[in-house]
Amino acid sequence: MTTDTSNPTEQQPLIMVIDDSLDVHRLLRARLRTEGLDIDGKMTGDEGIAAVQEAKPSLVLLDLDMPGTDGFEVLRLLKDDAATLNIPVIVLSGLHSPHDKVTAFDLGAIDYITKPFDVTELKVRVRSALRIHQLLDMLSQKAQIDGLTGLYNRAHFDQRWAQEISGSARHGRPLSLAMFDIDHFKSVNDTYGHPAGDDALSEFATLIQQACRENDIPCRFGGEEFALIMPDTSPEDAMTVCERIRTTLGEKSWARHPERKITCSIGLAGCDGAADTESGPWIEATDKNLYAAKNGGRNQTVSTVLPSKGPRMAEAG
Image (cartoon, helix red, strand yellow):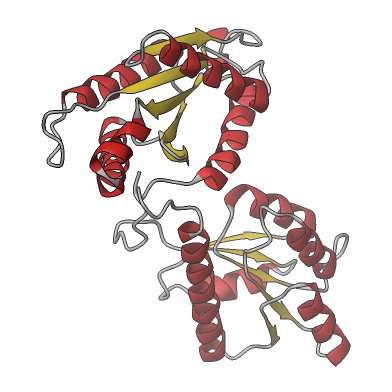
């Protein structure tokens, strides 16, 4: 997992233009071509809403006066949807009345530019909106990071787990979830002090990060418990990942207590196809396996293969 937002190879910001004028689309592409942006466009409000929900652009440029679903309704729907709420919207409209401007701002627009627009002014306002979006993204990301371990926190886990189990059910993809608990963690704190306990948590988090794959989602679930969401991963393949983590931890030497090893117990549950289990029961099954691992002597992985709705889409043709 990486949280670095300064990667120079990351994709250019995407701007979604929603306007019923083809000339406006052409003009914006021409005027903004030097800004290092990807620009997509839709000609109707309904198409624009669907495109924004799908692509999650960095900025929306929105006309108000469109047939069918007008810009005011588009803006209202985007701001009523938690998935698109924080995407900034600049109104780019031929409507000049103060009432229209006030309504647009009340509905959540970040800026309002009237047509015909000045090119330099447009560029400056677009840059400003993109900076605000980037800062909001950074703040949102920091709010989902555990301060001690650098992994995602429980809030992020809850959000991503709901997304991944829904995606598995919808697209027929395998999915696995593992829960890790450091064995006898309280005695580490009691015997060697809380700094040693913090070291154990931090080092274990690093170990999980190093062992998991690019699409895996490692989180600190709470206390000495960690969770690893493994999309597109069968229970068999997930077991390989978990055992690699467990074995590596057990072999590690610790500077604060070289005479004492630290181990972990792991509960694992997954399915080979479309998920047929709701989020809560799936977590309960994983947690049950974790306690079985601990009650069975610790330092082991207990796994369950959950039922699938049917064959994976790729296998079903």
